[in-house]
Amino acid sequence: MRRFAILTPWLATVLFVVMVGSLSAQPPGPPGGRGGRGGPPPGGPGFGPGPGAGGQIAFESSTQPKDEDEAKILKAIEDILQKQGRRMNVPAADGRLLRTLAESLDAKQVVEIGTSNGISAIWMAMALRKTDGHVTTHEIDPDTAALARENFAAAGVADRITVVEGDAHQKVTELKGPIDLVFIDADKEGYLDYFQKLLPLVRPGGIICAHNMNARQADPAFVKAITTSPEVETLFYMQGGGMSISMKKR
Ligand SMILES: C[S@@+](CC[C@H](N)C(=O)[O-])C[C@H]1O[C@@H](n2cnc3c(N)ncnc32)[C@H](O)[C@@H]1O
Image (cartoon, rainbow, N blue to C red; front, side, top):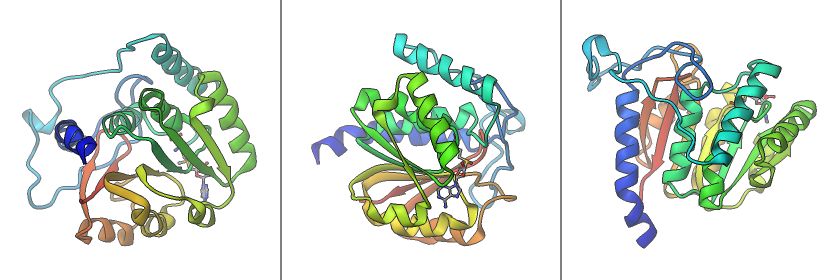
């Protein structure tokens, strides 16, 4: 209980940043900065035009490495993207959000659905080396899983990440809680199934994020579930590829 009490101000700050970020879609940018697969803001009751003129965010930011390990990880992300191209990876804005959530949640157990070559897992591992946490990431394609493992080694975060090969719909049934943070970024029509299977394992105050939550890509059944369930408080962050952030209520 004490741990949750300490984290509450941090989460309030993070959620404020998320809400501000949710008011603008941004163009592509460098690995440490903003940008990527944009999408329209959600709109609807309660959504105003945003904090600045025309709904634009007033200030830019990028990750400023605090130590050598952080600089090495940022460089690894840049190198991987340069050599391998984008493999449906999260843009930097979303990677930075995931890292921020993992670190402020003091995450010990993170679960990712959809590894690709590992960019989002590397962003989260940047936090997990500080929180002494671990991410279990799921990938259905063996060659892609092998490439991700190589990239985790190159980034120096292999000890923080386990890659599970196979269909995540089956594999997640082998997981045990408590989970601090879930990131869903795989088959869009599968999001509802992942949400239903993983929510019971998420600890109170934990968070489930889902990617590509824009009007074009999101599965309406999943959107309905996360916006109508009284078990979660859901926000939408639209600075990168579009992310839903559902906190499991206490
Ligand atoms: C959008 S990419 C993930 C990108 C990654 N999160 C990143 O940002 O670096 C989706 C990945 O999910 C994998 N995938 C799709 N369906 C899956 C399933 N049922 N189980 C496990 N992985 C799956 C795909 O092979 C693909 O590599």
